[in-house]
Length: 213
Picture 1: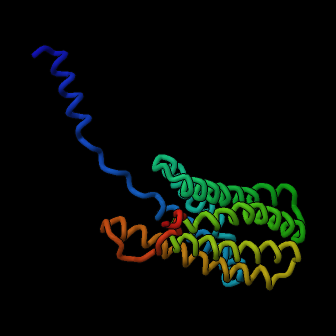
Picture 2 (picture 1 turned 120 degrees about the vertical axis):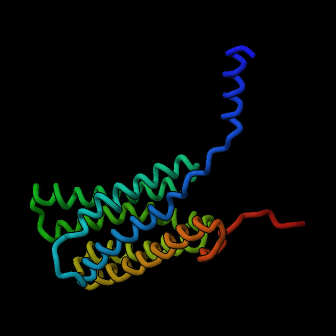
Picture 3 (picture 1 turned 180 degrees about the vertical axis):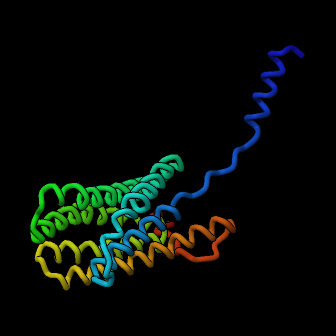
């Protein structure tokens, strides 16, 4: 056997060894989204008595970690997960930068900040609306995340446009519910992925099939 034959045989053997499937990044993306949503929502509901502690986590966890999960979903050929996690990861980074850079630089009034936030959330509400519809084709748990988030964003848009604090507080409470649903969905993805079977149910997706004749 020549050296060329040996190299060719080794190359063939390497190709026959299947690499393990990559881990599902969705539980990480959902957990990052859930925690940051919980912190901001608790602040909006006026449950917290501290500073804007959610900002750091908006950058590092809800932002960077969720954005990475979105990039890994592209590798998994999951267009829904890639679009959702990348978009909301960028949302958290953008929101944190707005609070940390724009607000100190321009010194807007509370009414102006509310108007800015209302327009920002309205833009993401438009995105969330069609993702809500398409989440029906993922599973019921993911649909629950987008449904509760839709309600949260509607309340926050109305509350910030109208400068009505009690509506913003209601949006904060809805956001805590959203975080709880996202944490549930994340935990299901972790344990179901570990076991290779369904232990924590997430519900079946909606399917579009032609009616049988």
